[in-house]
Length: 446
Ligand code: ADP
Image (cartoon, rainbow, N blue to C red; front, side):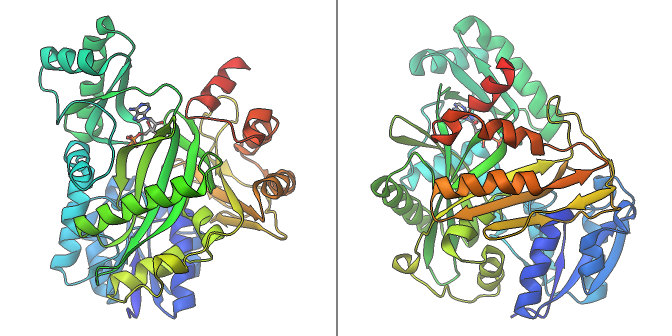
């Protein structure tokens, strides 16, 4: 097992990784920008290294500075968290070249899944159902028109290098296609430096259901059930739950089985998430994330497993300690992403937190790196914490979520806490009857 791990991230996820390391008796090295000198992950880590100025490009994305920090401190492995360099194949390659373990899959798997066109082809070959669409990318408008006509409108133009909902445009009818192609290409070029796009059937009212997997280097692959991430705004997840209110046990076992077989075939290592859209009883692959996800705690809550510990173990070459039949799903869990944003306009709200009180009690977990007196810097993602509640069933979970939200006090900045009260007041949400466009429709109506 590793003796020292460098955590190449900040905020709640850096703290999350630190906690797992502490429990495993592993020393941690925090890295930070000048803006994060007072951050909680820096305070709690065993060692810390300042790697550059506030802008992420010069600090959390600065590969030479991060490698220097790893060398100086003698870290044997690097945990990338999520975001930043977590899905950067070049970074994984460089880490490996330095004979340091990258806690994640191989660079080839990151590269494969990062190219959504290649990924779709690879998983389809491995037996996973995909959204009907173009075979590979579409290079000309004429080709795009032909494909769209075959699959039928509305269609979605998506960026091969896509992520974070960028470079995605809907074309409701043939007349809208040229414009959708143009904007998606331009957005993709600006965001990813790659304007390759492909076309998919646009599903009207699907749910977003994703399957968590973990694979060791001895050929063992286990799935840890699904998460329902249908509550979204601008293609970004807002609230996640496990299990999905839409699936029955048979469907869960079936999709889990398909995913495990495919992941085995691909020879994948580490934790990963296979994301699907689910409509009328059918699953359609959209992408595979080759890292730990923001919403991993809901899976931890229903399986009792520590996903970061598992991730570190398999990266060190250890075998999974359980088989599929040993994984038991118990109860229900919901996670709310708390952002430093205005809850109505969603405008970022950085600044100083003057008062802070986090909820506690049975079944309430907070993953956050903020505290009273902490100033949220304006440079990074607005996620400041995650409230994860669990209960014996969904109903208990909802009751607990209501009371935990009422306990949560953050003064000095605006947060999205009130948004969750609004969501919980909706009968359709209480009944688990929602799809990926539901939240945006609700926000539009008000
Ligand atoms: P990104 O990598 O940018 O997050 P994804 O492919 O994971 O892109 O899709 C993000 C979200 O976009 C999905 O959760 C869903 O809400 C929406 N989406 C993606 N593909 C489709 C589709 N074919 N039809 C309808 N919505 C889609």
